[in-house]
Image (cartoon, rainbow, N blue to C red; front, side, top):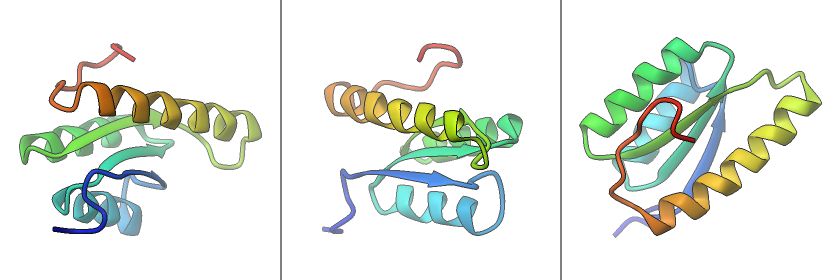
Length: 97
């Protein structure tokens, strides 16, 4: 059993590169990933790919240079953590959060 399994992990810069790779790897190991970046279309595809492999992922578009975006992302992560823990098998539906 992985020590990351079941934990909620927030990753910024997840639309490409190391952030994307980290999201995929952590989801494969059982983490529930909450990802963020500026390119929402890439985040949507990543969430779909993770969920297709039975992983759990949610996303929020954000700009890490914006304090307001980062605060909102923190609130989103907390909301996701509560929802993920209470409905672990709920599939992602765009706009449902």
